[in-house]
Amino acid sequence: MTYYEQYKAISLTFTKEIIQVTGMIPQQVYLKCGGSFWPCVVYSSSLEGAKVVANTESDLFDKLQQANNTVSLRFCFKNTDGGSPLTFFVAAHSIGYVPYTGSKGMVIFTLQFTQRPPDDLIEIIGRLLDAKMNCSKRQDERILITPETTRKLKILPKDCVVFIDRVPRNCILRDISFSGAKMVLMGVAKFLVNKELLLRVNFDDPQESFLIPGKFIRSENVEGRKDLLALAIEFTDSTLPMGFKLRLNDYLSQFHRPGDIHLPADPASTAVPDPASASNPSAKAAF
Image 1 (tube, one colour):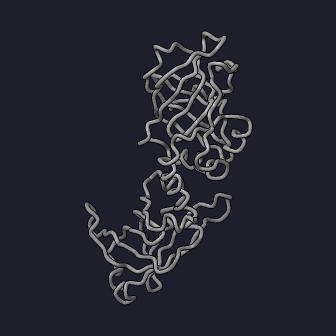
Image 2 (cartoon, one colour):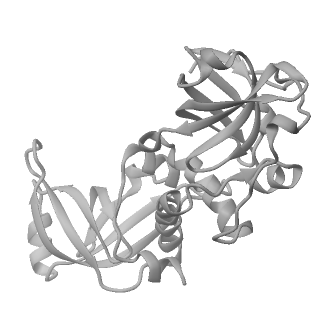
């Protein structure tokens, strides 16, 4: 089933985070009507329509009336390959508007697309909606960090840093999911369990770094290492970065069938490297 069939009626609100993740260039988004262009802001969009904010202190209403409310919405996104921006028009019909609270002359237009949107828009919006849905549906499917999954996920597990009381600590990532992670860390259990934290996870190709809030929920001893703990982390779902959701969802969609479970080996019986020797060249960076 394609993104269009699955998610065509579900709207995605274009927050600052979504604009950044999608690479939208807001300054290059316009409404076109009767050969004229008006800057607008995409408030939300599905694959069947959109809501946009525009200034009506112009001849926009006159042009809409002349065109029988027929418009085109111009989208513009950064090109992930570094080339010219990705731009395209989506034909639509304006089916209503309401004042935009707190801004004189600004209204929110409701646009209904009159045809299936370009594949580029389906891919951009569908990929994000798929990640949001699977963040709930597949939240407990853990990915064991192995050389193979490291390569496919493009994660840099030895560069992970956990911030406890704003102090960076080296750690070794053992598994990861939408809902949490497991790591090996030097420390004492009674001082760490139930402690809030920020986990910095780094990815490659392209290079991205995410700070994920959470807390330690339980610990296990590591056999033969009294100075090390295997600690389970529960992420704070409401603040999970969208870019992180995309990374995990892309991996699960390509390499991990729904219903599969990646269960890590028992860290208490597994030999592990010393977290203090992990490669963390930027561990002291501020956050």
